[in-house]
Image (cartoon, rainbow, N blue to C red; front, side, top):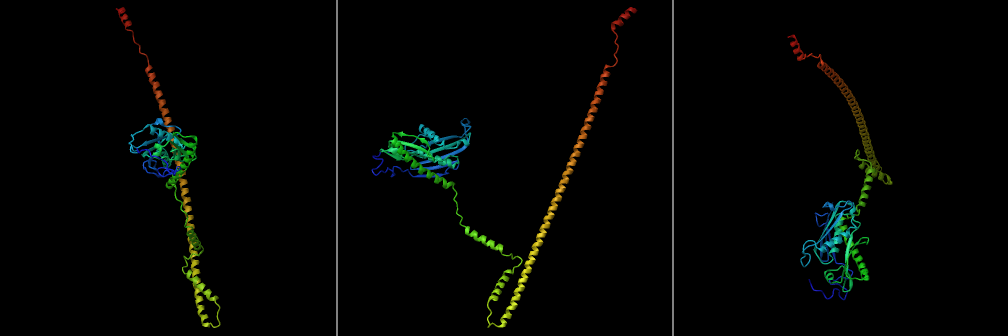
Length: 418
């Protein structure tokens, strides 16, 4: 780490990097740099280099983290081990856990999480190179990545910090000003001016805080304009001005003229006839001079007769064409009538077939009912026969009783006989 400079602000009011007190560092933003993420952003702010990837909305795992009424927003801030001069220990630390928490809370009022219950929206922030103000830069990049992922939000979130350096309030601290300054005050604002993040490290008076807030509003406004221009470049489709309107008008006028002109399908010589008629009219309109010879007049007469014959032929051809069109229309009407009659005949046949099918079904149902009745009568007859057989069997079993003599009686009789 370099030693502390003598002055962080020169006598001319300039800082070490040449900025004024109310100026932010140059910012560069790229969208869609990660193909596997739903939304991503790469941001360079001064010497800060930050990469953000957004995944979701997707099913939240483990399921015990799910919320029945809204999505779970998870924000992970991580600094790469090579992002600072002294190698950082990989893995989460107390600082990264704290920044992850406050950054997540900065987005919760803006993201419409209630639209995606039982899901999770994951925001992964990787600091590739750190140069003070990484949490504010990460929030700006995360806002762009969320918009790139299509996450519904009430507006973009912008973040900037002000601090106290050499007794002066300055905007957007760099590394030297952050390390050797007197205070650091990061803030995050929505487009409506609501504060979603507010932290302070150092000592500031209320007047200095008010002055710093004015600088933060100015810086966040500039950052918002940069964010909006980058998003417009990707999502806004350019509107092309209609330049071909006059050509379309000329085409319409040509089509109208073509519609008004008579169809020359059946009179190919009509154009030539019109030209000759116009020439003849011009010749007739010209005043005849006294010095003209009678022979010239007689020469024009056969030409006019020829023209009249051509016009008559063209009219005949046009009449023939109209007759042909009428014949074609009559044939088409007859075909349509025939098609209608055929359709009606087909419909009548289908109706007859349906009626026949219904009658067949009714006859089959009657037959099945008769068969069922016959089967029932047969079963009843069989049951009656079985009952009669059972009664006869019982009668046979009862039969005449056999008389069995008692052997003692027979013995006593023999003894008496003796």
